[in-house]
Image (cartoon, rainbow, N blue to C red; front, side, top):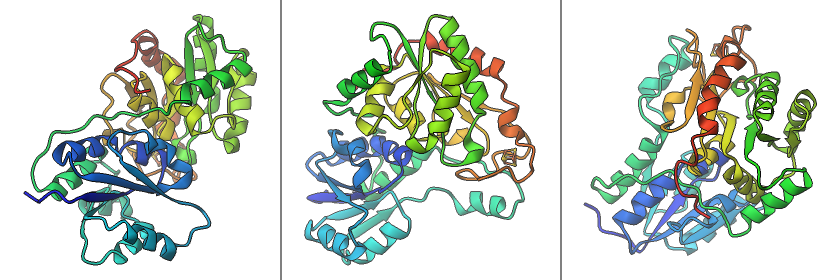
Length: 345
Ligand code: SF4
């Protein structure tokens, strides 16, 4: 067992989903060392994701204009008693060099034994461990003993629901009627279920008496436009929600439909029943108890760790084999399931 330090510096700079997924590890760390100050280093634009987490005492942000050396000096001035690197990429590896003499524990996203056969195209990727368990293992390594697992939870800021309410009001959404959220985007093309199928789900949900709103970044505006055009009555919020509004919007939904993306993890963390589509990536990385993950299981999938620009085989069957009818059958029970847990506003 390790002695509890005065503070632990947690490094996880991006991306939305990966930052949201650190919540159980932070809770486990807090429970293990309740007196230890937990400082979280993250990109400025994502700080909101951890700002209201009660298991984070201080958030240190790096902006686009801050150089790595001046940021490293800021971190060193904090005099952390230990570093928990849940990022483990170039940025955090470099920063670790500037913190000599400080105990460091580094998580590993995947086992070398899992990744090598995929890189050599010998077999599809199979996650041997839940993503959250890998973060948890790093916490246990740091504290030097087994500790109870934390829960995946997302903590809204005090304004988030109001910000979303206003965006939804402007989009014509009735606050009294149930709302289904759609998130058709994803960074990589092979993580995207076809947009016309999202529109098909929107039409069906509207026919059942639900309101539907589609969410995405400004760069994903075309997806929102297309769904709104194919499913009249759908509110298009693409490009209109910052992280405050995104959390508030997702929390307001009775169900959420998304690709393997940050908003999908946020929805699970908010206890909103979620339908997720997986094609070139592996759903076995995450826990979908109370939710639903669709995966066609074609022989080539999952072919990558985080998605690709295009299907290397050209047929894209991992997503195209997931038809709208199957998705609707998976979504129907979620529409009436009710929230999985109390929301953390
Ligand atoms: S269909 Fe294409 S993108 Fe999907 S898993 Fe197979 S090779 Fe990868």
